Amino acid sequence: MFRTLLVNYKRFGCLNITASLQMEGTSEGSGDIHFVSGNPSKISEADSILKDHKIKVKYMKIDLPEYQGVPNFISEAKCKHAASIIKAPVIIEDTSLAFNALGGLPGPYIKWFLEKIGPEGLHKLLAGFEDKSASAICTMGFTEGAQKEVLLFHGITTGTIVPPRGDQGFGWDSCFLPDGYDKTYAELSFDEKNSISHRQKALALLKDFLSRRSSA
Image 1: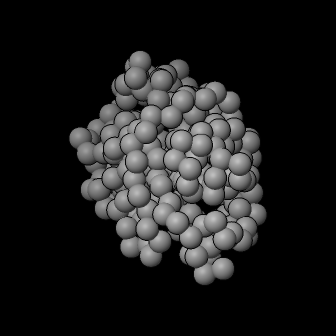
Image 2 (image 1 turned 90 degrees about the vertical axis):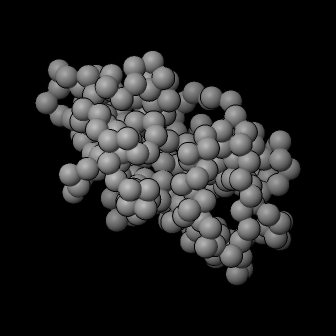
């Protein structure tokens, strides 16, 4: 599975997942970790997945700058910026929605596309294409501090862009139909979505790393 994720994600300029997981913890990692996001819905999903972890994670609603570039650069820049504000270990999250017919767009700029045209507009972007497939990509960034290395953890869920359906979830959930399901993200229950989502997959890798870090 990891090999598949890495191959699919190379075009986005991302780090090797396995290499990230092999990094050892440092003595500076004994304090609280802060999950930084300006999106309360993302914080809620992350909390439901990380809440059983023995390392204490604090959640902070901070609107970080909207950087431009490939996902790796954006995540690293956001992570370092957050760490420079908090002066402590931080976790940040960045999401991309890549349409295969459009060469990976909207990608990391999905927030701006969504604000301008909404889920229905996202579906209409592919009106002239037979290929409606897409990849929902979550990148979790972790660093011990602003001057430390940023480690990235990636989760990908493949699916299809469909006319908006459902009123659960947020953002573009209503137009993303995950492969193997007949319900969009927005038609799934909170727990169902969290069991298969791109965010859950990235957080699972992050949790594994944090467990290794705490026992190092």
